[in-house]
Image (spheres, rainbow, N blue to C red):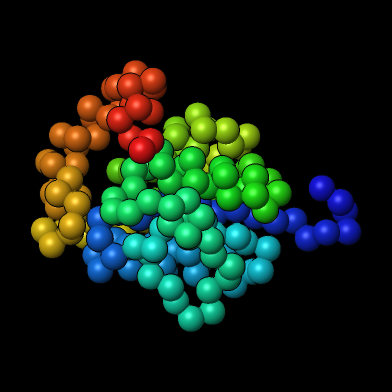
Length: 167
């Protein structure tokens, strides 16, 4: 990167549940806190993360990679790397996600081709209600449903996980 240019920073934000859940609203607060309105930050996220006033530059994965309905973690990671390629952004990602989701987010970003992935722990001990019975995604409605599904996904061999989730 040229010394005369400002360093571009990438923040990949993964939603958790539906747009109106408390967790996704807290992700907006975390984006604001983490980026501080600094224009060097480029945020790659999903439309489930509501916009807020004074947001820095965002790219929505849904606008870049056409698809409808629910998007898997790997699908979002794959869209994020394609967005970075398209804009010639560095493949160094800071990651923001629900605490129980971040491990798989980091893994997927690394496996899909990001050179460096830095998890961001904003939520530990904050008492946020991540699981919501009104969520459109059944596995984000309760702790038990989440972990029942998550453990299976983490244990799948990569080729099978990729085949099942990258549609």
